[in-house]
Image (spheres, rainbow, N blue to C red):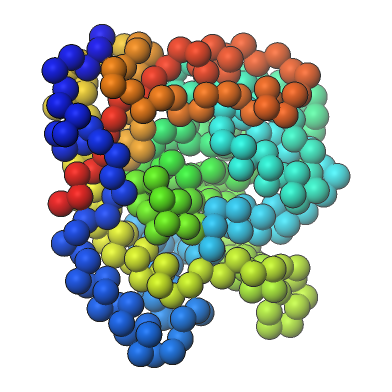
Length: 334
């Protein structure tokens, strides 16, 4: 069903960065404080951003300059060099590229047609075949992977290090539990298009103190003793200040998206992605299995296994790439 009658100038229908203009003066005041302090990196706003994100997520957090910095910290910690890492093909290329950069070997897993996320059935088949050191589980479109519990249980039983790619999952929860809390590590992105954006930036969350300590060292060349590897993945204080403002605004941003989905989009799309009981999406994307007009395109146009020319059959992934669309759902900037 097309979005007939939808006003492209109406709130939610045209792209905007999810920054509320009401926060502008406060943010400028924070940036002025940074300029005055002469401390532009490794300062109190980075600490505050980590604390605020951890309070929402329910896990301690380490801020980085990008998703890649957090992902590489986790992969280097578990040491996947020359080891297999399972990865869904229905994801952004950053996910498999992080494995290659860490020296690992990617083997692709099919997805489900219901949630677009990794298939437990194919995951188990690939895990039995390849005996992976680690696995990426990607939460697609703003919701949590429907089979996260089963995948997590299998990983714990078999000793597979589980990384959750939470780049889309700001504001999501399942019966109150937040993304990143199932696996050993969760990795967030704050790229410019994300529900919570700092332009560039990332966050690692984990229940394991040793991983958090490694990530702090990894983002800063391995300082103070250089016992851990690392390069520069520090987040600047200016970026962290924006992250503080955005995180505090997150309940309103995500709440607006949920309300807009329920009132405006759900009545138009009966053949949409349906969430299981107790799950709440952050609605980075609004996914339908029927054409949307206007449309923001697809979550992913081309599967990673096709881009990387991997010799593997993933029928659900290829079906999903052709048979889903995304209706506009953008926070209207206050």
